[in-house]
Length: 294
Image (cartoon, rainbow, N blue to C red; front, side):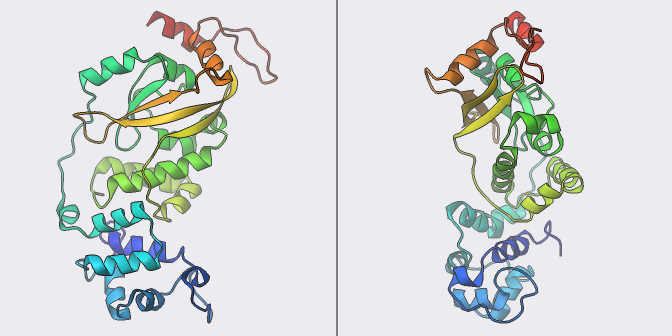
């Protein structure tokens, strides 16, 4: 039974393998064929039978009580986000959900708001597809254009990885958020295509995806190394778009009065020299020139 047909079992197995006997407070006895806790150890610590826990992992019982799930979550040391994901995987509504695939469309009001913002901003879909972006966002990151996908770029585009020096940490956040967003609703062809492509192309993606980390994206500082203005740190806020399920408005903004604010203001101007590999240069940024005419 695959992860697609037994998402609960795949999740329990992945999280079980991340908890060591020492972390669980039990002796580490015998040779272990796989990392983490054994099934019977999880069952013992959760106060349920080993046979019942085996049925859960193998997808033979998909209706455990909340009390059983809470006990398992305690043993697997799940935080609130991971426990909420566990509940979603076993809920009848999540298992039976088969939504018609709909095109992600940005509401007109959200587009007007995007165009009015003086900070770099864009609107992303459920799977981190770029649905709209303003001029300064494209000057900050030329890949933030309609049709681009942030997750694919972070894993497969060396230029994107140079722009985000801490790109591996960023990808971990993306994957954890994708797990939370999708839950047990894995029938969407867009989701299957994206995960399939990255699983084939990136060993790092395969490793991170197999961990089943679940976490919502929250406001966080992001460090960039821009080819024209050098290193800067911006705050990244991700806001829900009203009337559009799963769409998010993402805004990058500097701390007021900081050097980063000055660099971003310089980027917004049309009179910025391009930085060559050794740090010099005099060619203007074409993206910024275009932004001034939009």
